[in-house]
Image (tube, rainbow, N blue to C red; front, side, top):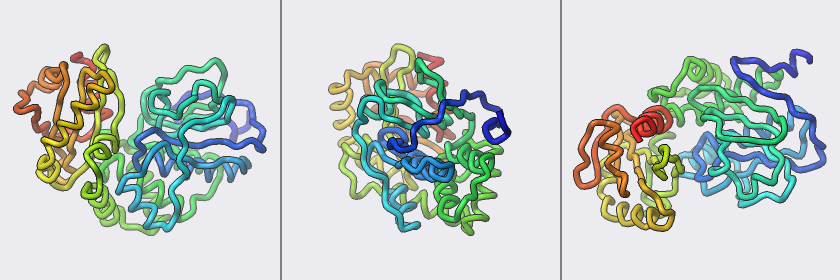
Length: 327
């Protein structure tokens, strides 16, 4: 195995056999896509094509949010095509997710070629494939390394996509998910993109907090993920805002929508995190028969189904492990 094949960066993986490049390869992130999911599908597709897979094509598994729309408009590029399901034996590459519950319909009958992700492993297959998982703040941080390891030049456009997603996932490096690798990537990519990361990042994050054109149903689906805390069937949704009170003004309508989702999905708990990107806190609205799990996990008291969780901004690091431990 030569150096190019032996990609090493504190991660274990398995090399897959090369697929027929004449067959389309579907590249996509998770459902209810965020900026990392959309940009990673575009960036991974570009990398695949640079490495000879001309049939790679980026897709999305849902509507883009305002933040992602800001990024794409800034660059003047189109959003990936919407994908609802894949045919049997389709070649697919997963980015920014690996859980079948968050992925495309019929994934179980597709052939997964590669996975590049920064979440916990939830995937099982009966065949070998390329896996690149790292405990960093953003999938794009891993992709930045893959470009370098494969000797592929990062263009200004690709750098901007990568940079935008890292800013988004780490909340401008303020999130506890932020690692030294994310910081190094932002420094490198901002130079290539010729962008002031702080100035651009604040503008981008604020654009993503505009919920004025969304219905209640759309808000509750923007970044919703099913995350079961042991036997507690749950959905945790997170929306960013520059002013928590703006979102809380819709509380009655949000609760009505949440209760409908709980009934339709037979949930034990729905958590809506309203995250203040300026002050790094989250107001949580918790409904369902196991809403008291929030009180137990954080040592707080829900009043009228809500409480402020000071310093909580990361679903992955400050919600999932704490809630699971206390379930």
